[in-house]
Each structure stands twice: as C-alpha cells, then as structure tokens.
Length: 308
Image 1 (cartoon, rainbow, N blue to C red):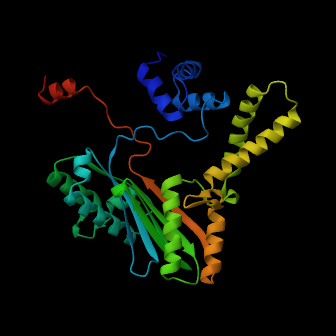
Image 2: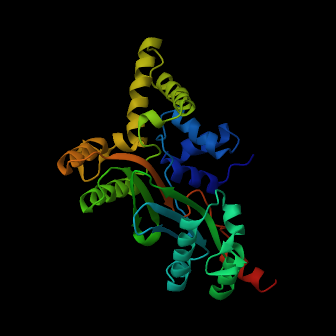
Image 3: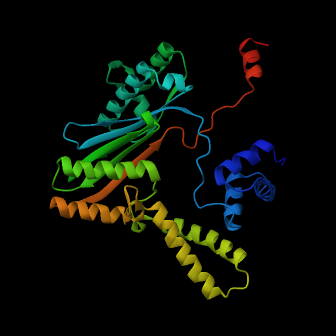
C-alpha cells in the first residue's frame, strides 16, 4: 500500500512522533493507522493515549437535568459548519433533543430516532430532524445520547467551550445541597479537562490491562534489551500503574490542586460537609471525537456543485 503524506501527517498529529518514525510505522503496518500507533508505542515513540488531532466535525453537546437533579441526559448533534453550530435556532433545537433524551426509554440511537417527537407527536424524532435540516439549510445528525437516573444522590452537568465538551457526573450521597453540587461541578470539570476512561482502577477491564501490558513489555524490551525478565516485569507493573493513574478519574491529580488526587479531594470535601460522597458514574462527550470531516479541494467542490 502506498503511504501518502496525508497519512503520515495524520499519524504525527495523533501521536506526536517524528515524521520519519510515522512513515516507518505506516510502512511496517501496511497503512493500518491503529496498528501504526501501537508500533510507535512499542518503540517508545508515542504516548499511551492518542492525541485528538484536529477534530473537523462541527456541532454541539448539550445536557438536560430534571428539577430534582435525579434524571439527566446528554446529546451530541452534528452540523456541517461551525457557523450553524453557533446559530441560536440550531442551539434551541439541540436543547429540545436533550429534553427528549431525558424522557426516552430508548437504549439505541436507532430506537431514539424512531420514537415520537415530543414537540410534534405526528412526527418521529428522525422526521423532526429532517424538518430542521430543511429550515436551517444544512445537513445535521443526532449522533449519540446517554441518560443517567440517580437513585441515591443526584446528577450534575458541565458544558465547556460553548458545547465543545459536555459532561454528566452522578454522585451518591444523602445530602443534596449547594456544597455537594459544588463538589460535583468540580469533578465534572476535571472529567472535561483530563478525559478519564474509568472511575477507578477497579473498573478497568482485565483485557485492557493485558493489552497494555503487551505493549509496555515490547516497549521495555526495546529500550532495555539486556535487562533480565524479572526486572522487565517490575518495569511493566510500574508503567502500567502510572498509566492507570492517567486514565482513572479518582487516581488523577486534581486540576484545582495537584497536591491532591481526585479521590482525596472528594474525601476531604465529604468530611468537611459531614456526609459521604461516592462518584458513581460519568459520561463525557466531545463534539466530533472519532469523526473525520470530508476534506475536498475547494475548486473541485465548487466545480462539483456547478455540475462540471
């Protein structure tokens, strides 16, 4: 497979590795981007987490929380341009989608799109979307949604950068007041900023750990070919523990006070308030994550529109 300059550029943006290293990685993996990332990691040339790179898809994330803070939803709705994403009519529509998601019993996006639209029950959610597309004049897509129902506590939300990132976090606590809500907001801001994958290391699946161990082992052997196996094993455990601290919320350094972990911050806050607080669940959506916007030559796009 021919390795193109754009492929090398994309891999470099994802990993931060050098241009020639990216080219070698793509050549060794026959252009498979995910395998190329692992190749670079094994050589010690890329971090554990892919860099987001340039997220091209536009749109916003919105949340909806019930008056008693027990039920909350989060949605991502995409648009073609940032201009439309900032449009008040589009934002009002996305708020309606979030309200629909808060009341839905659907568990898949397909089922959600097929249910009756609350704003006009003669239409489905999909048909209401089509009507909005006709009004706004740009293609739009309800990409995903999630919902949290708190049984023994409440849900808080946080929206960053005008809808670029949205977070829901559920706290289990017998006390629901301004103080515990402030703690939830701090935790939600942490999630928005650092993007953890799990609440704690106890939640990390064994297959994830085993996969990471294999990569870390290859990395350690490449860096230290003369080290005995027992030393390599200790290195792997140390590196895995360090990585888990980065991907597990409670073990991360707290962004407002890096002398504390998030776990310690929550414990201290609970003690000060005189209650118990447990982080039960979180959902983080970032607009366009994992999506690539179609990138065409502008002249070719104009010619295509003119039918040439």
